[in-house]
Image (cartoon, rainbow, N blue to C red; front, side, top):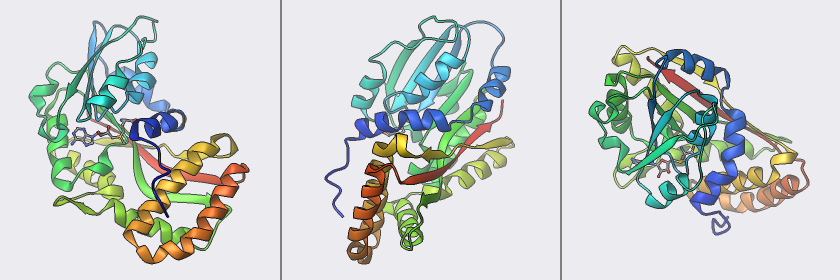
Length: 272
Ligand SMILES: C[S@@+](CC[C@H](N)C(=O)[O-])C[C@H]1O[C@@H](n2cnc3c(N)ncnc32)[C@H](O)[C@@H]1O
């Protein structure tokens, strides 16, 4: 299974943006709105913003003047994030600043005056110690934290295939691999985050936010499948031989609009 057909990271984030937007727990917005200051401009901090999909999703759902601060370690992704104007629910442009930095070094002082801290599709990339540090900074900030689209490791493909469960298990092992001495949490990140907030006395509400990909999302389903299978084969090379026929069949199904994919995620709202 070759990975050379995979998209650039920015293109991948763009491709998944509509599915993320459809998956995000809409009911959360009203809960968040009730926790924001009643008047005045608000400042929102988005951690690991990538190309800015959280900004584009949430800013138009919130009223009033907004200033967003986007953090990422990748300056090219941050440049994408500021390329277009985003407006609030009132139709006024929101102002956006970027900070190219390591999120795991942030402290509560960085969030002084924040109305909300957000992140999306981020937690699985952290180690347990990094989750502790990021949660400590968020818990000490005088603002709620909204963490969306965190993977749980559970996926469901239709039609079902006997290899699905092995690939899922191998992919999840890959997500938990050690990179440069850092043991990533992968699908264990949600539990680690909820437990870390609890240690700071901060309650967390949880909503399901699965991707439900069908014929209309065939391109995303195929790209997701390629990355999922490539990671699984990297983790367990013995899967490579059976994976070849499996991949041909799945990708043909995706191209014909016959592949269904559910990728489970959770949205978390902490504190406030
Ligand atoms: C999967 S992407 C999600 C991007 C965006 N939130 C979205 O939903 O489209 C995760 C982002 O977090 C950034 N990131 C991960 N770990 C980071 C760290 N320690 N410091 C700064 N940025 C980090 C990556 O560069 C990447 O842009």
